[in-house]
Image 1 (cartoon, one colour):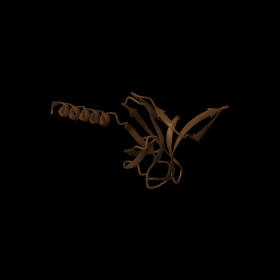
Image 2 (cartoon, helix red, strand yellow):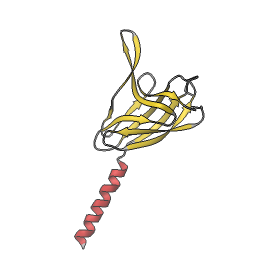
Image 3 (cartoon, rainbow, N blue to C red):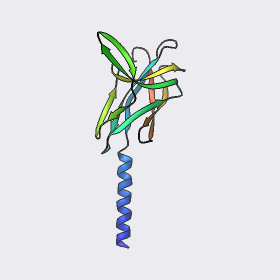
Image 4 (cartoon, one colour):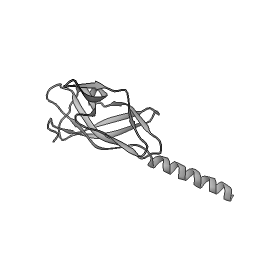
Length: 141
């Protein structure tokens, strides 16, 4: 009986630890641009877990498509290019910010400053995380 109780306690502790170790999103916002111009999404992805996590995709009903992107300067020219994945180290975080890594919202739908839109992040291990992104104007306010 004591051994069984001990096993239940250990399993419960393991499950509680797994819940705490899930990735989280903070400072999430998306920049609404005039007309049908693509919009950029920015946030910090924290990984408190003991293993690295790999972000592989994103989607939102507010975008026709939503891609992982990075801004790259080569030969004095700035380009935006898609990326296949973003690795976040164990116990670390990764910041998506203007002029760097970001989400690229193509064919934005109803992005109105002052509202929020859901964005679902998908990870290589098959898990996903949905967060609310504040919609801000072209100046980031």
